[in-house]
Amino acid sequence: MIEHVRGRFSRTRVNLDNQRFESCVFENCVVVFSGTGSYGLRDCSFKDCSFALEGPAASALQFMTDFYRIAPQMIEGMFDKIRRDK
Image (cartoon, rainbow, N blue to C red; front, side):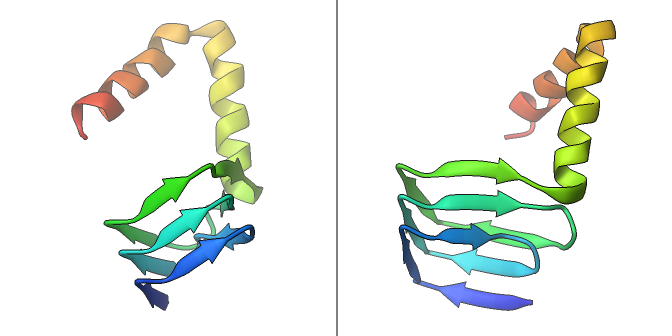
């Protein structure tokens, strides 16, 4: 796993998979998660960034979107758990 400590990322695309970030600053970045490897984020800050899901992570989001149409309470339950487990 690649580790970044006190790194600064600006106006770039940053893939999270297989990388760990500690005390990093992200400005005007596209932060990408594919779900093909683990990642770590600790004490990082994000300013004017966007988030993108690709590959398996995008497929999981599509599954949740489709399932929300037929059983929204199940997806809402998942979001409630996320909110509780901060």
